Length: 434
Ligand code: AMP
Image 1 (tube, rainbow, N blue to C red):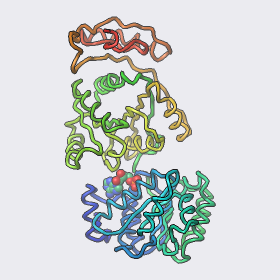
Image 2 (spheres, protein in one colour):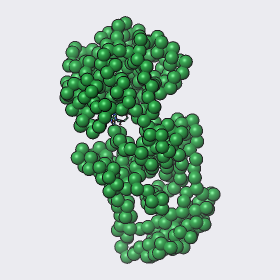
Image 3 (cartoon, rainbow, N blue to C red):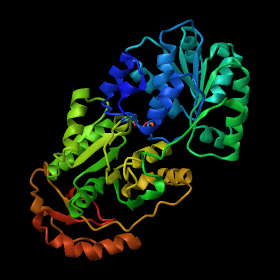
Image 4 (cartoon, helix red, strand yellow):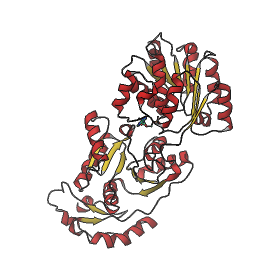
């Protein structure tokens, strides 16, 4: 099955080809023709299945060209991140059409949204609360909505949006197409589907990403300045050939890729500041196994499709806990178990707790493996690497650090003069020199 078989118009096929998708995912194969035919759809699909394109592509095609100022398609989503992501997808897939997509969500000034809505939009992606505020202020007219999507409906209900959703429904025309996407089916979702959908096509797809249960998750506590040494150690010691590493910033991604290269590990960074061709090159080199570590920021990693990626490293934990799920969903695809390791600095304990709260489970903190600190690039003037060799100072607190020193002595000594053993409480080699 190819995208051409789905009955999509050339403008959309071109945009999809540019995204680099080879073939439609199972949800796309089923949802696209049904939505194009005007049917209601009830889809059980998680993030990572390609569900967004599954509804965005046929909606773009059905709307065709801009008309009027009021939105003709409304996509309700639980969070601002998802709103931005869905709108971004609609703009990317619709880049050869002139349709206008706009997103609105709470927590930011409403006035620019009002101004923007007055200019007209065809597809409106919205969180329910802010949408109601806008509707109350008559900034948006929902009386022309032809296609309604409830995306991640289960999460919207979990977040207590059911009353807002019901109020939104009252503002829509009675006759319209309805699509409901949900990762899980509770009685509440079933009731909502029953009320909303007419003779829907039911689609249930296996998650393309491994369910989170299949991913072995672990955290190591490690001071920020030692993270790169631990990462280099993990890659080398485990002989990882393909590891995806997440940093929080573009600058951090660049720097880490350079540091890994300096430590003799082939690495490349991808992020929003890099040109499309540079990103494609880096990704290809990674897929081909020429580059062992791909260092990516959140945004750049969206849309990366790398099959059966065994290791994902959170070099820094994300500020938004949902991003953790997206990140680790990249490992263990197609039912294989993968491994996701988070390097948790002193200032990241709160972020780890946020992730655990979201997952409703604890992420085991494993004893930090012993690793050596290898000073490679640009040693400070007058200090050769060899001079960094020093006896470890095992002043460690905590079981993890203790364990690591015992083993560290055995490992580290063999590495010769360039090494300084990691100690949780010892200062960095550079500091020790002063
Ligand atoms: P979603 O489940 O909609 O959040 O999509 C998950 C990821 O899969 C996104 O990063 C999409 O860019 C990507 N994706 C969507 N459709 C395809 C496809 N047919 N082939 C490869 N990747 C895709």
